[in-house]
Image (cartoon, rainbow, N blue to C red; front, side, top):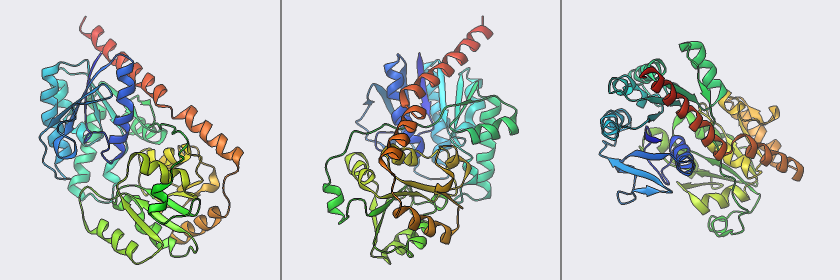
Length: 372
């Protein structure tokens, strides 16, 4: 089966939830016999990397602008996809899904994956939110199939648009035991004595809340892994406030072994977000058997943390209290084992690829019957 993918900046090692999703999913689908072509955005990828684990990567020119790049790239990508005549055009995200009607006019079978209501992100103005809402509507109305990455997203789509949707979550690759500690040493950290958080420096991730709450914590370090693709006032504020506290370390974007080491040796993982689709970083942390706390937004609740592990989004004192409580209450060996097994069972990429392939087959089968 021939698949074309749009809506991602690209991969490997490009920051972002959609990017991590695609980087993990599509190599599994190639192993199951799919021929995958991903149209990437040239500013974000290595131009000379045209294959990743069997996935064909085709960079297209792209204006690096947070307001226009996704929609313009997807618009031109649809016409590039038409030349390939794929069995399925798989579009990720509600912004890129704005072009779904054009793809249907070109007689392409479109599957949309809804990674969350991006119009709720704090960084967008009124016009951008309107366009994203329209993208969700057009994608939901005109696609041949819809995938949602969490139950809370799927419930909203069914209620708002009266459309059926498959719920296929993000996944996580369970890592082998990490023995090296050079990165931990490089940052002057003590194993098990630092709090970890990972994400892009955008308002909905809540990093300023975490930095403010951490001022109440003594004897521990806070490590924030991440940065921003488009520097703005918020990202500068995160960096300025972090610099004011000697116990806070910003590493910038990290991937691979460096990131694995920080997960494997942390004492607590914190996700203070106001908005998520289904947070891969939380899945990764739980997959390491790491003690985790998270804001009480629905996508975080979908994952399977115990109720006492949540705090109200935006409640600085409540967040500080939770950090203080759980740095003094690590997981037992049995709790770690049960958490890792739960993640492995629910969020296994191989099983996720099987479920995605089944949606592809259903959409292709319906279309074949319609044209018979």
